[in-house]
Image 1 (tube, rainbow, N blue to C red):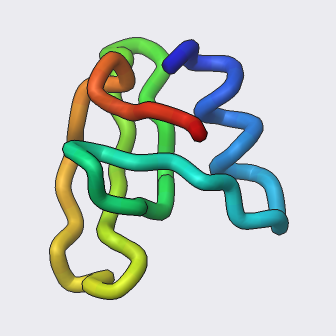
Image 2: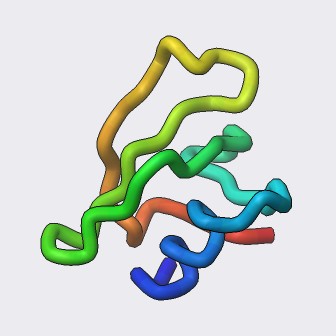
Length: 59
């Protein structure tokens, strides 16, 4: 996923269909310098993690 699109999704009040390893996730924050995002699964907000933007897929 491109940095700009990830930032748009993170800032939007509308929930986008984004997955990480086949699991729907919420993007909390995008680090454009490191090309990473802070995410968590929609049903498990306690499982926060930082992942590469390349590993995120928008459907």
